[in-house]
Every structure is written in C-alpha cells, then in structure tokens.
Length: 200
Image (cartoon, rainbow, N blue to C red; front, side, top):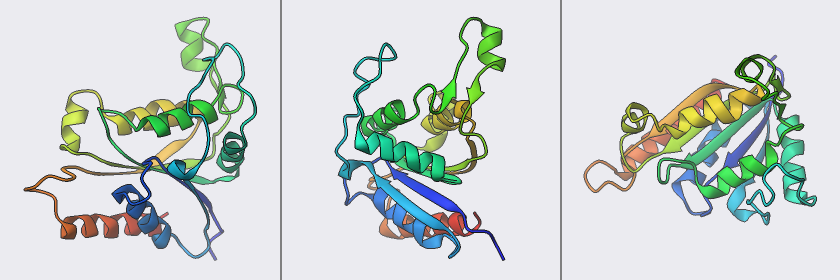
C-alpha cells in the first residue's frame, strides 16, 4: 500500500474566482486518496507580504507566516499555482516567498565568496518535492527564450536553493486570447493537471 503523502497547495492568484483556483482544485481532486492536503489561498489570508526591513532585522511575528512555515515543514510535496504578470509571479506570491522562505528557516547562505555561495549553502528544506503550475497571456516558450521564465526562477532559485526539488512543471499559455483560448482548452488543461496529481 502506498504511503500517505502530505501535500500543500499554494495559490498565488488573489482572486478566488480565478482560473488558478480552478487549477488548484483540479490538482487536489486528482491526488491519491492516501494524500493529506492543505491549501493556502493567499488572497484569502490576512498577512503583510512586504519584507519591511529586508534582512536587517526580523519583522514581528505573524500568525499567517508562522502557520505557512509550519505547513512547509510538514509537507512532503508543495504545489505552487500562479498566473504570470509582467514576466513574474504575482506580488502576493512573491511577498509570501520573501516572508516565509527566510534565512535560518529555509536556508543559510555563506556569501563570503563565489565558492561559498555555490558550495556552502545549507538547504533546510531538503527531502521535499514540488509541482509548479503557471498560466500566461502569451506563449510560455517566449519567456524561456527571453531568459525571463518565472517557472525557471521559482524552480531553480526559490525552491532549489532551499533544497526543494521540482518534479512537475505544467504551463498553459494564451490565457484570454480571443483566438487561442476556449473553455474546452481550459478543461483539457484541468484534466492534465488532475492526471499529474494522480502520478504523484
């Protein structure tokens, strides 16, 4: 019998009626019955997404940030669902990353030299995996060719530097395009998302 897996789904779109929320629901519906699932719909949470002091000092304790960190540590697998706006993740999700994936919690980095950056980073979230799901108003390949792929940024910088290995990436372009987008196309992508969750 398969062992239960603990999955946390993070929705980076602030609108609860968004297609991102439908994608998250599709992923949750496709998960094996042995999985335990928690959902963080960031638009429904009351937290400050601004890292007010940078890394100069810690901000006051925030129950949402504290709970988010607890869930990240609890999870075996993390799922991030977001639209791409201005070649990046929404500011709400970016702020959540900055508040939650902090030094000493997610990693410790020795920036005394290039060698140290490459080989002395302590990744505190190793052993976890992730799925990254993004939607675009344009074609995903354009962002990759232009060197500004937000999926690559999340996968290789935000997650990998903390020890989280991305095992699934799903992308859908041409959202809201009058010639390329359609309800049938969106439904087909939701089915693809659910199938990816079944393979977890």
